[in-house]
Length: 341
Image (cartoon, rainbow, N blue to C red; front, side, top):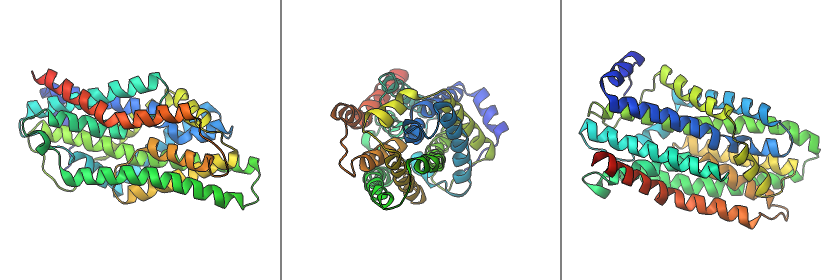
């Protein structure tokens, strides 16, 4: 499905619930920009390859390019997110449940950011959608197994590939005569590639939710190939870029400096491993987390030659990952019940 900008604005003016869905989704995009996007540039900042300000500007531009480029030719990730949950045929109930899911994402991400923990807005979004859908008549029947199979496969692949490819890249770079200065210069390209792929992954997810909200407001969502309008790509990309420009230093410090000690070569290895893992999953149409992928790559590269992760930091990150699905899902369920009461 596709929709023009004027048609969408006309729908939003006549449907306050759709207008609220749109505002909440823009808030989620901003939150994603300042909590999830910094993972892409964390190693470049930690190694001194880029200053914080330059890295943020680079990430903002590459996020925008990634959203636009992949939405034109590979909208499979957006399709999977749209088809993960069934919100029924009643427009008011469906859009209200979608509002609850998005509000749950904003609350969860803000709480995690407060403690400087890199959470995944991708998984928060999916779990919020699931929790809201479970609150509706039909319960577990509202979750579509095929889409959730892709989510599960993406979760497994992102963590395993990130770790293994980060470790492998570290081994390969160890054999090359690269000076620390050369590694730092190459990290600029690595950070740009990671930010581009972050935009490719997360931008698609939120594009899909925009289209889902517009369809649900008319009670006519049907499965099928998505046609993403250019105006919507620009809106999602710009708000994600704006969120990135707001900062994200806490997240960068947590995974770039506090998780494991990274040499310039290890930082470059994490960028290469994480980028390759994200590219593979995006080409396969699997919705994955940039946070999980990059953090796993950092662990793989940082521990490849005897380095050790700091247990306290690793534990706090792992607990947040484990709690995101049940925690954000429960928030979505509770909020949907309250809004629909």
